[in-house]
Length: 286
Ligand SMILES: NC(=O)c1ccc[n+]([C@@H]2O[C@H](COP(=O)([O-])OP(=O)(O)OC[C@H]3O[C@@H](n4cnc5c(N)ncnc54)[C@H](OP(=O)(O)O)[C@@H]3O)[C@@H](O)[C@H]2O)c1
Image (cartoon, rainbow, N blue to C red; front, top):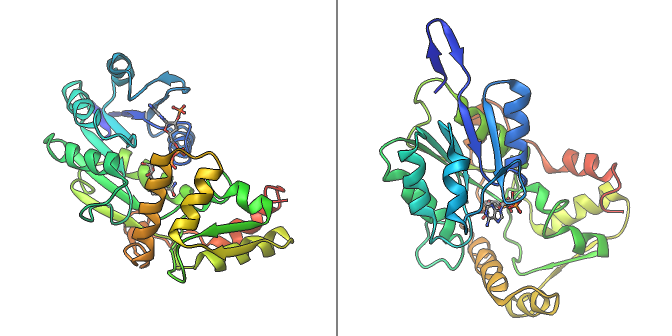
């Protein structure tokens, strides 16, 4: 992908969507630290303004972009038009953040990611799909942070394990694929898991041990989980999407360890326990 000018290589311009989010901001940091790309960091509140719901922001954000890290919106409706516009404006490589098993028939979540995967495959330019498991960072930056701090994580997943992955590994894979020379990653779908599958009870125990305080995992029925989300102020649509996500996990569709990180980076993915110790040392779950 690196453009060649005579004997000099010009780093490609990469538009990173979701650039303030858990993977996007790590992709931005890695590309900038390595000097392998000129980065345009885009989101509603990002350096470059980009809003899926405001098509007027798309063209200015795409200016000069040759490669694109695509973090899709939940609503699939704008995705195809944007992807076509991106390809028409000069994007030659799409790296799409997707999710494990979202191709399952009749899923009630992940439609934006699925639409992005389908849209890039219509463009005729290089595309790569990254399909990670749940990120470690859901425990310290997102959904499960508040419950852990409160001392109790309640979810409807039973004993089905989940091979959680470090968003740093996802970002390193994405940055590598975005800037790789040649087309070796074109048309590839990488399922990205961590090195071992843990139940949520085991992950909660690892975090509690690292934090040095009692935090318990409680198994909920899907109905009880939904009731808790609604009581906590979550909109119905979000509660439905989370319920559908846990149904997918519960059915075992995302529970197997994969070797996607090793395929791209040639090394094992990070383990949850040392990560939990380093996060706990910052007092995040205190
Ligand atoms: N979290 C996981 O464990 C996980 C695992 C597998 C796949 N995924 C998938 O990864 C994607 C991102 O999820 P995440 O949890 O990582 O999200 P996240 O960290 O919350 O990041 C979301 C990003 O999207 C931006 N954004 C939100 N609304 C936007 C809009 N209307 N227009 C433009 N940008 C917008 C946000 O920035 P602004 O607020 O500044 O706009 C933010 O940078 C989702 O498709 C999710 O299904 C997540």
